[in-house]
Amino acid sequence: MKNERGIFSALLSGVISGVLVLGIIGRLAIASVAIGRGSSMNLSLRGVLEVIILGVIMGAIGGILLFIIKKMLWVNGLVSGIMIGLILFVFSVVFALLSGRIVLGMSLDQWVTMLIALTMFAIYGIFAAGLLNKFTRG
Image 1 (spheres, rainbow, N blue to C red):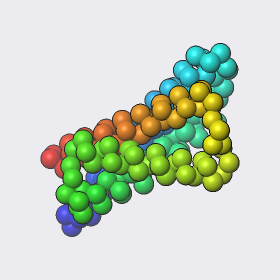
Image 2 (cartoon, rainbow, N blue to C red):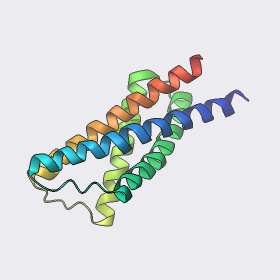
Image 3 (cartoon, rainbow, N blue to C red):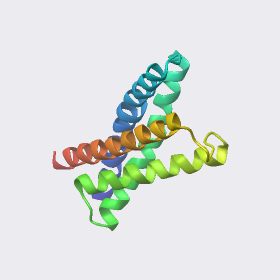
């Protein structure tokens, strides 16, 4: 019963963090990069819903990984959060490379966007780990 509660808490903290950090705040960060480059922000309801849904999916995956890392490696807090953020970032970069969304000869703007994405994933992991600690402590 304790493992089931732990999995649910990890999944919930991952999803909440994914929606907030990877979804909504991530979309705002990318919009600010577009403004800085002089491009249009292209904020549409479909685009916002898409990043929220992707935030839920990535958050759920991150929550499950967070549970596994806490149980198997006995790593808590900041370290586990950063590990989860890095794992999800690498996963998403590999997926983007395989789908052709990233080319290896990237411009400076693309490198800046990748750095922002890496930062967002690290913030997600730290936020998810902190939220899970709060859930498990009551």
